[in-house]
Image (cartoon, rainbow, N blue to C red; front, side, top):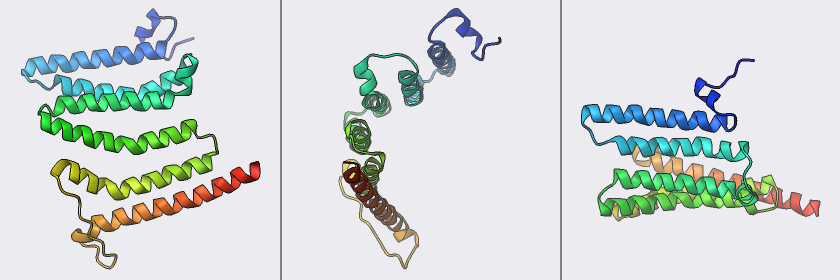
Length: 207
């Protein structure tokens, strides 16, 4: 029977998916390194950490579910995946923003954006309720984050908060972004509250 894996996998009996992914990652980086050296540029590490981030986001959850791992890793694999992704993002920010002041701003922004991710991951990993209630918490978290993300980002990067201009009777460029952010936040909060109420009702009836 013909194997679906590339030829490099014939040299290993186990972990073929991992082997193929790693060899592809290494070969792609070797190609980029050759291009970088040929053009006498200094962008190789930026591309390396960008590819590393992409591979971590895509393949680490797959491998943790595909291959046998110890119990603690299996229980906390969502937190582990999020933490590895966060570390890769921070490494990429450090390479791109070599100035100390710019890196500190970028780091604060990344950590702020990671807060809702960790809230959702912790909710689905450790809150033993039901999917409806957990989804409601995720929607509320997303709605609150959507409302404050521009203001906090501007405060961190430029030193002044983002000013909302909201007018639902005027959708010109001045009010467009504020109107959209406001609608997205309100809808997410409304859906989240409804889901939390339904999930709580379901949880009470189950008991």
